[in-house]
Image 1 (cartoon, one colour):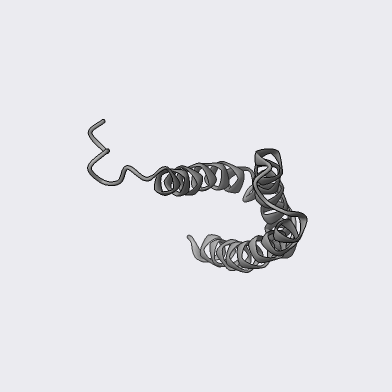
Image 2 (cartoon, helix red, strand yellow):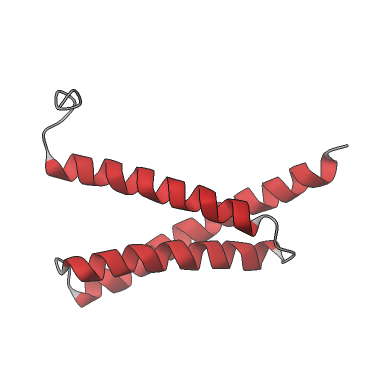
Length: 100
C-alpha cells in the first residue's frame, strides 16, 4: 500500500515486476554460466536462450498476443539480449584475466 502513490496502473507494476524478475533470473544464471568453460559466444547464446524462452512462454500462456507479435518479440529480445550479454561476458572475461 505504501507504493500506491508511485502508480496505480497495473501495466506499470507489470513492467516493474518483469524487470526485477528478469534481472534476478539473469543474475542467478550469470553466476552459473561464468564458471562454465565455454566461449563467450556460447555463454551469451545459452544465457539469451534461457531468458528469452522463459519470457516467450509467459507471453504465450497469457494469450493476449498474436503469433506475429511473438515472432517480432522473440527476434527483438534475442538480438538485444545476445548483444548485451555477449559484451558483459566478454568484459567479465577480460576483467578476470587482468586480476592478480
